Image (tube, rainbow, N blue to C red; front, side, top):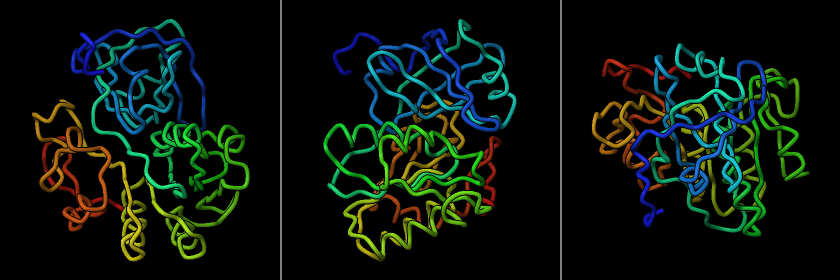
Length: 273
C-alpha cells in the first residue's frame, strides 16, 4: 500500500453492493474499495453517514472482490448506517491502525459480541496460511451469535460457542471458557476482541500462563490519525498505536484496561462489566 497514490486518511465514496442482517440489531454492509481490499485483519475504517456522523468500524471481510463492515445499532450514526440500502453511497476513510500479526501455529481466538467481526478476517488469513486455530464465539444468546454458519463451515469441531443465557454451548462468558481451554489445551498464542472486561480476564490468564496475546481494543475515536487524543490509553493513542495491542503494551495500561475510558467530552468514565 506504500506505493499507492491514494491516501487512506482522505475521504472516498463507496457504493453499497449488499446488506446482510446478521442478528438482532447487527448488519453487515458490503462494498468495493481498493485500499480496503489491501488492509490487514484488525485494521479499521471511519464510515461517514452523510450529514449525520462518522464512526469507526472494523473490517469484517477483506478480499480483492469486496470488503465489509459489521455495524451494531447503538446510536444516531449507526442508525443512519443501518438505514442504508444497496446502491446507497457512504464515505470511507482508512484503513487505519496496525492490525493483527499472525504468529504461532496453535492459536486461540476469543470473540465476544460484535468483536467477532475483527477476528473473522484474521481467522480466514490464518487458515489460508495453514494455521489451525481454535475459536470461541460468544454472545448473550443463540440469536446474537455472529457469523455462526460461516465459522462452523471453516472450523468444525474447533469452534466453541458460549452464551450468557446458556441457549447454545457453554453457559457463561467467552472469557470463562477461554480460561478453561487454556488449562486443557496446548495453545501457543491468544487473540481476543470484544467487551473490555472479557479482554482483561483473557489477558490476565494468558499472562499467568506465559502465552503471548494480541487484543483489539475500542476507544472513542474522532480523527483516526492520532491528532485529537480522544482515544488516549495510557501512553498510547488507540487509533494510531492500536487498535491491536500486544502483551508488552497491555502491561503498560493494566491500571486502565477494563476499568476506565474517556467519553466523547474527554471525561474519564468507568467501564461497566
